[in-house]
Image (cartoon, rainbow, N blue to C red; front, side, top):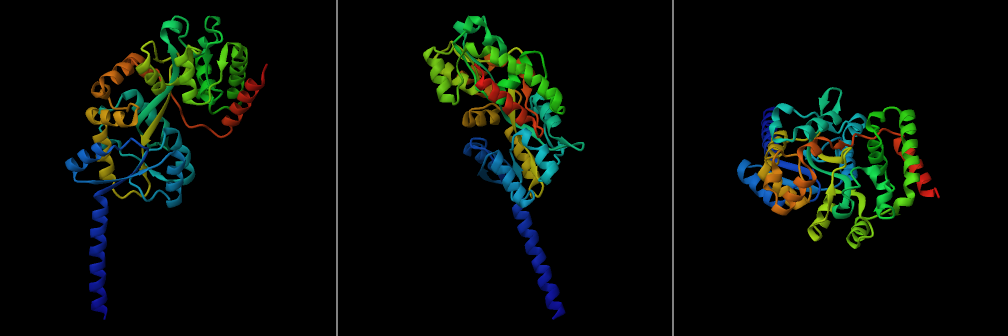
Length: 356
């Protein structure tokens, strides 16, 4: 009986080992729509022998799924960089990235450094950049380029009644930078941040007479710009490039004080079982020619150095015109938002909206 038990245990261990090895050959990817297109998966699987299983999600769902399992169920996830340090400190759902296994030379260095800095917890790096985008200025360059160079230029009398922006936190952040302040540097000091936002509030109230309307949705804004009712606005890069396809005078312009950037990252869930496959995927999709395929599917560029050269010609031209290298290096990347700051911002936005 004892001998039989030992034999069964040995068989069970062997089977468990086989299952574990089999699982390690599968990369379970938790990501956004468009970030893992089928053609890229096929190329990766053919080259590496790994199998990729994709679950599409968003920031809130990613955190919820990983929190529910203590960081299990997936081998690689792609939350935005401001969703890493907080959840890690509170829930411990990620594990550090071994940067020696990352081909760092494939990344735009300013983006890699920014993301590593914003995702470092207790001396360990938890995220590297993948897909990114910005908000800045979308304008009719034939009518506003000589006047509007930065966010606060939307208040210039020369474009009175023909500008638009949202009453949302990116407007507060953008105006603060254009006014010579650094709101991100004040994130750790609520009093300093409140004082800074008071100055922005006064500027936005003074600027109200210039605003045609505060836009709420992308379709609304694009209609206003297409019709000529609005000649300059705060908006996303992809919206500006879409308008440029219809009218070459309209495009996205990186503001003098810097576009505001978001980055969706790569992170390793705490209980992931296929780290080797995860590192292989990261290094594979950061190759410029592969990254260009992801840009074609997602509509946004990646942190892959030189990938714009492989993009579709029209999109490549728009990107390069909006983002010369110095404009890329000047992007202000959103760091994690400390507790309490959004309440400060909400009060400012309410008062701007109510002001006569």
